[in-house]
Length: 282
View 1 (cartoon, helix red, strand yellow):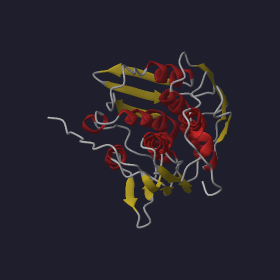
View 2 (spheres, rainbow, N blue to C red; view 1 turned 60 degrees about the vertical axis):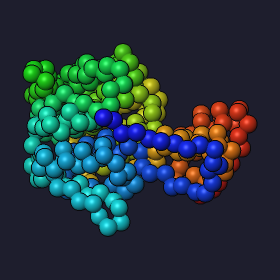
View 3 (cartoon, helix red, strand yellow; view 1 turned 135 degrees about the horizontal axis):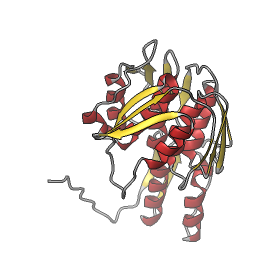
View 4 (cartoon, rainbow, N blue to C red; view 1 turned 45 degrees about the horizontal axis):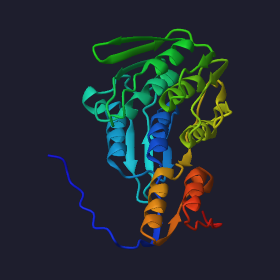
């Protein structure tokens, strides 16, 4: 039996709310963290089930994780590389587990990834991921519910995505970040989470340009270094609260947002007659 939410309407929403970190940005940054030797600390990590599953996957492949007193998450992969095999029992719980494919291939040239689960929004095959990673030199085989990958000789390449898949763009970006030569992703996804991944990779020493446009250029580097980085706020969560306030004729202060990520929502709310004001505090 599924859980039931009972909502009693007719009440104006008032007050203030602080928006948590973006789940879809946090998950890919957690995967990308294994590409650097040493401790990475992520701030603004949302404490939700998907993140906890991702933590379990990290632990399962040999990565030490710790929730710190200030709410940040410490991620420290072992010297010499992680275990290159993700658990089926964990991967089936989370679609984003497939992001370890690009991260592992980029870090150590070998990966065995269980086909992922997670929310079932239509059919989302891995063909675009496989096509892009193969272009960079990965040898990939799909067998018995697993993707087996290894890299004998990797080189930068031009990849055209038939569809601007967020996950495929992310996997290709991660492998390309440590692949010799220049890689170009055409018809790339442009979501804020893509920009955040590019910023995170650049923060670690990668050379990624063009994120947020449909053409991303990556110049491969030999080493990525760890550090401390804050995940972007969740625009979906922020937009949900804004819409709820508008339809209940309430008034709320939504804190920890990036207004440019919310311009489409703001525009529609204003078209509907709602008043939306941006402050200098974000």
